[in-house]
Image (cartoon, rainbow, N blue to C red; front, side, top):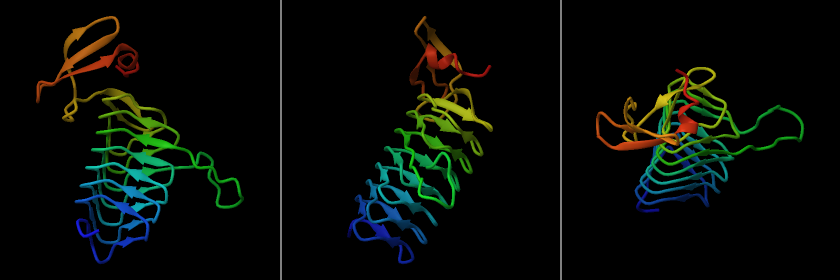
Length: 196
């Protein structure tokens, strides 16, 4: 792994697959059956559990643990100390441990100290506000805040909130970003879930 930076105080178990250009910083730990893509940043104190798959260009900030059952696609941002869970009914005793899946799709951003309850999907380019507690699926480009998290609006691929409607039909609402001018199409079925 000569094309990977691993800090001397990081622990990367034998068998872990880490892509070219990835940086693993101090006190991070990557388990031996984990797969991490190219050009990722695993910041101080990050833990990547067994069987976890992480795409390329993913930035994981300090103190984040990505547990078994979680899959992270490309271009995802995980803010400082955000939390994933992986068991719906955890106990410290017994044999009934059951890992639930969580999928974080391409381009999603999760704010600092947010909590992601397992068994859900976070849609492409969605944005989870800091401190939010997410208990259900988030649509693509969805902006959620609060505890429990609610759909407060939608964001552009560039991250800016979408406020300017360019077009509306019975099936979709098209927004134009005020920053990058890119158009984003939101299905009416997702748009109607927004809290007004």
